[in-house]
Image 1 (cartoon, rainbow, N blue to C red):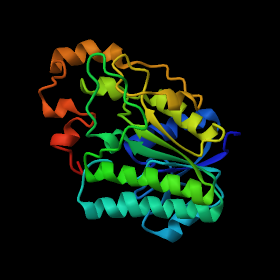
Image 2: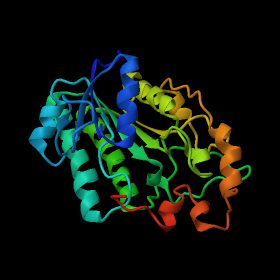
Image 3: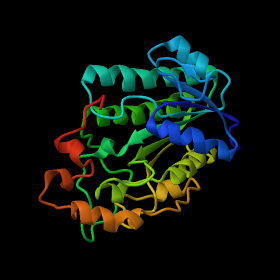
Image 4: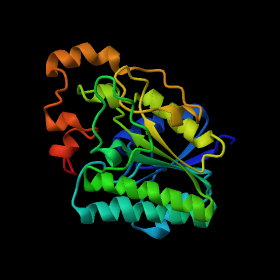
Length: 269
């Protein structure tokens, strides 16, 4: 499909939102920024809460697509996750349906399948259709978001690419992250592909760079036109010297979700 001209970016003040609001305009997008708090250096950003249906609908009105990054990005109580990640995502999809927006990019997470054993040795890469095994209420909310996206495609014709993001930072900070890291530049490439690919219906992809130590299958992402250019291996020697290799006997190393399985970081951090 032609590149959308105006894209609503939710969670624009967050870590990933900050990276994407700098990188996505390079692909020709005009961004409408939305967050619960003011966005530094962006006086025109919309400050609002996903719980406010009127504010969400106003934010969606007139855009061509939505990149949904907002919400709680770590573990929290179920009540907090329910309000921010589940009800908030529903409000956004309803607003998109009401305003005729037909393309969404949903920031899902590897924590939707966090209890999946990580590949070791000659094990095959984890496919996108592996059974969902959330490791937290946070991961559970991402399963809900993927199902909501499927419902809105089947029932209302709203297309979504759900991106199970690994870790998107300028560089990886742990040995585990060598396998799930997505460089900011590759993140922008993937979101651009998700916004412009034809006939996605509801497509689930993993979001990472082309890492030497990759754990999951990127074929569905590549089918959108995504061509990752970066590899975390350039950071491997330093991280392994500092932290050691992953151990299969360590429960936090045994599963895809890492320490989210054993001792998840709590929001706010």
